[in-house]
Length: 300
Image (cartoon, rainbow, N blue to C red):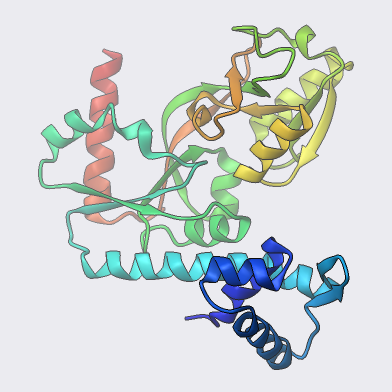
């Protein structure tokens, strides 16, 4: 589905040499060099600078490196989705899962849902949480994936053209490296964050995060707010490596093993639940109705 030379290109870029890439690919260095030469010729670009210190990506190589990873993962995901489609039945709920959108929220609720809808089965569909995938999956819920767990507000639902089923309100917490000075605490106050860099999604992403942002600017100005564009594992890595603080929710506690998520003494929270098509199938609607009844009984 994609040029296999792209995988060789990624191995060479990661290894920094043809010889190391050859060892990882279980082929000869000559074969690796031939594949890279063919790829450069086919694309009519130079991907590597050959220096006495090793290989260095050119600007074209850096650009292709970013896109190639997405292309390969997207193709792999598309094969999984195609295989899932072959096994598809009217009584299957396809749940999209990624490190940022874990399906664990349904584990506790599933036995009671199953009691109400014994004919419905779950099928997990893994995907890579990239901006491109997020746009495509949420815009096309009901085609390859039926529901995705996550936080949301009306802005996100309108922009992504999907609907949201609220399961709970998740308090906005802070994630810190286990080596951070705050990691020894069980709970934070806003004053604990004074002098820290607090990573928040950019303004306009969520009404609830914007309310938090305005509250911090007005009443807790010693907290330095740092914007970022998209929640992904890379952002969690950045938090751990930079020793900054990241706004998070408790549902993400297993995303990164070297981060600790701490509650904060403020009243800010965000809706958390399932994103689904505005026009769900009959099976998805039965599932949502059962989930609503289970949650109602739980509250009673």
